[in-house]
Length: 170
Image 1 (cartoon, helix red, strand yellow):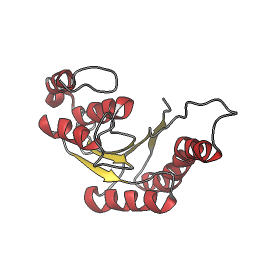
Image 2 (cartoon, one colour; image 1 turned 120 degrees about the vertical axis):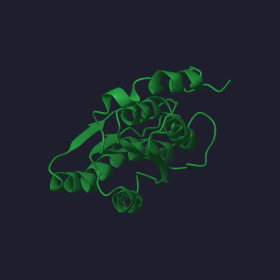
Image 3 (cartoon, one colour; image 1 turned 180 degrees about the vertical axis):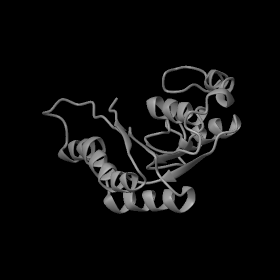
Image 4 (cartoon, helix red, strand yellow; image 1 turned 60 degrees about the vertical axis):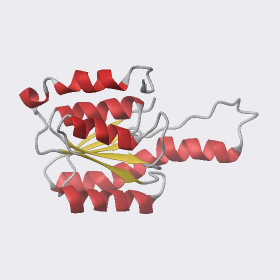
């Protein structure tokens, strides 16, 4: 049986989020952009927001990637209980990719109501052993991506009448 990054069977996630989707729908007609939505907190957030009625855009550097981080699996879980979700490929540490991700969302969903900056990476080495390139990757994904996604998304959200943005690092 496939398990998520917490070690829980994926089937339990589906069961947990199917029963009360139609009852709540507090986010009906909202569009949520979630970076790092292929596993862990990002996946759980994507599923929860979809359960509440939001259309979810799951962002990943490699949507075709398997294993623990699999945004296509997140999308499948959401669609299996009747939610709307799409996986989008973007390296959120690059402004050109962030702009394309936002353009895609606006062109296909018309608006962005929720931005959840969740993408994050770690490096498991001591400071004396850590390569500069690995440090740069951590800073780019964990910090620069939050800046870029917020910089280009919040003005759009403000023009729509408000912004809900959250940043979380695992």
